[in-house]
Structure formats: structure tokens, C-alpha cells
Length: 217
Image (cartoon, rainbow, N blue to C red; front, side, top):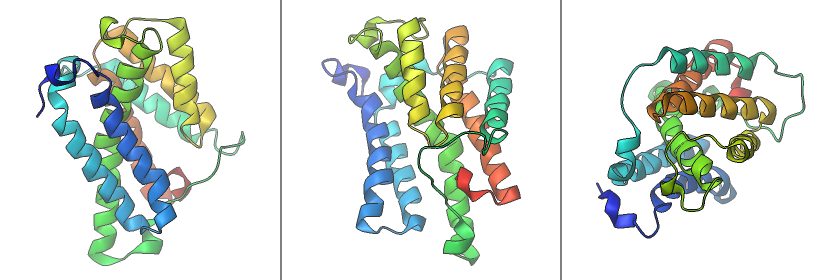
């Protein structure tokens, strides 16, 4: 793992690289006709490796602890994510139905990777990018000079909007971004929005597998 001082001149690199890897794999791999069964495991592993590689840079921001606020917020975001379905126009459409792509052990492999990636890797990667880097960078380009969880109206609104428009369900995405930011502002610990985000995605995965509403994947 790389020491935090390694990127003192470009401190944004450890926050941007994992997010960029995920984005490139998500949007470019389909152009080269990569199998949907391979894209998610590949990007999950690559992002996880990059997070481990840069871990020393941001480990001081993530203090492992349990928070009822994070737990309840994660459940609440899940509810607002699924309940308004069909009530507003979405940006684009995506669907991952593993039952159409595989069977047997390959099917279980695809589902496990999707659940692990969405519940563990994605929340860590996105919260580092949006809530640790993004919220502070929007307030000051020297983002490391801004204490984690320091409130700014501009960065709160701007980053919440960007987070929302990153997702097909942009409206609830904006509210989700606001809630995760609110958890960080209150707790001053990045682990809390990571936990909240992870609970949301875990519940969403369980919901998808239970109801076969594959459009949420």
C-alpha cells in the first residue's frame, strides 16, 4: 500500500483513479462487446485493487464504527430509491438479469460478484470520490485543507446534483447524495456514509433478487 505522502503534489489521484476505473469499465467495455458477465467482476476487482493500493492515503478518514444514523439513513435511501418508480422520467435505462446470461455455478458467481461489488466496493469508491474528494474540492481546489465533513452550501448542492445525474434514477439519486452528505456532516467520519451507502445497495440487491426487478441493477 502506498504511503499518503507519495501523492502530496497530486492528492486527488487516489480519489479519482478508482472512480475512473469503474466509469471506464462501465461505459467503454460494452463498446468492445465485452460480456456482461465479465464486465462487473473485472471492474469490481480492478477497483478493489486500486483502493487497496491507495489505502494509506485515506485510511485516517475512515474510522470503523457503528452508527444508527448511518444504518437508518441507508434503509431510508433504499425506500426512496424503489418507491417512486415510474413517477418521473429517468435518464437512460440499464438492466442486469443474470438468469438470462448464465446458469449453474456461473449464475451464482455473477450474483455474488454483483452483491459484493455493489455492497462493499462501490460504496467505498463512490464515497471517497463524492463525499471526501468532491465535497471538499468544490469548496476549495486545495481540498486537503478543508476538514472532512465541513459544510458548504455550494458543494453540498453541486455535488448532490452531480451524484444524482450519475445515476439513471437521477431524482432519487440527488436526494440520496444529500442524505449521504448529511450523514458525513453530522458524524465527520467517512465510514458512516460508506456504511449507509452499503446498506442501501445491499437492500437493493436483496430486493432485486427477490422481485426480479432487474432494471434496478
